[in-house]
Length: 577
Image (cartoon, rainbow, N blue to C red):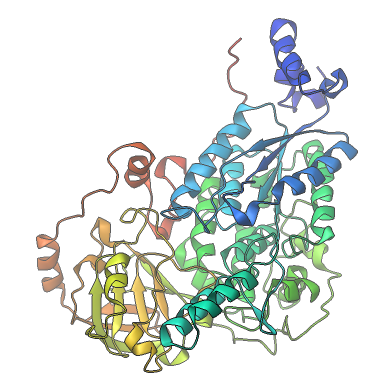
């Protein structure tokens, strides 16, 4: 065995002598592969989240074909395999409930099979972080290819954003500004091509995070799903993964502390989703990289929001792509000293070298740092106080400035469903300056921490012209959503966090400038309420739901499973023959 063969895991299968090798090779040959593919060339897995049940990922089978072309061109042996598709569009109770299962499945399949490297194909929100988590835990050479955003939505001569305009159309319908027939027409105008949300929602955000982390080829986060350059970059990724195997370039060498700092600053600059916080914490945990919730506030404070995209701005991902995409943002940050340009990427070069020649073609879409959409310090803020001792977050760029410092009466609901049952009631006891509190939506309580925190404004207030209210929840909000919504309150109510003890009529104060979220109830009274509190009955007593609720960590630790934190490596499993 040569030194080259020694680092090829696949040789333990396809290079084996005797009966074992015969079994492995012969069964692969029933697919029509010739004997020459077992000559020691790198075996590349293509982990695909393709599924017709995940509309954002429904074109990944064609992306996989492009990856295969690149692998063959570079002298590798490509083998595509399915992993769980967790599309937020259809799956219940929430795709987040299954992100850790996807990560676990991807990790075990990569480790258990004769793979030397892997290309990760993702699209909808949770597939990108789930695959990165799994790949990080195995730590074989890996490169990500995201499926790309849809083309811009078009309705009545205007651009409309998938997700973002769902909230707007719902408000318009409830307020009587749109009819149900008009909404039906609008539905077909928002999602008019393959791809994920074309707003700066979580799918677009996580594609950009994969690129900012160095795990995706430069510029590839933003090409539309139906643009042929999406398939060109997939083919390039196939060629590149073969070289990465030769170089033994692994995720642990790429996703370092410096890479996570770059991603956090990039997220602030693009006005990215708050969900990036949970996913980046989980990925870092798999690698043993020290990253905390407070890092997201501290590192983002000097960074202005420069990408003018919905829901914070006007444009959509297609416009961002044609303006120059993420490389322009990274180059601008690097030139301002806000990016570690030496961080290594899947290209084998530094991020600084990758983006040095990036050019911006539209400074309306990607603003100069000196003329930003939102000033430095207006990104996602981390809040603490007696209502959120483990932390909470608020996306300032999607909030109403007048509500970022607000005191109001709490109107409390134990579940999102309890709120929805009464939110249309004209007799609901709620006023515009109240604070809507939704609990029972955290990682363990729902379970799965769904994107329900930005509940709609009560109908009677919408019809009176109210467009925003302070809302507080231990759940999440879609990256396509907007409003003054405090999210990810930790500890969650289901485990006895202070949110469980809030009562209607209590006074709550939000002060984003001071980074505080406080309940005007003294400690003794909170202790009395705690003593009288009973935890909710678990939703699941068996199966995956039981496993999830027993082992999920809180939001401030990325909501991963406690037993999956850390890397387990790529040691070849024991032979069974």
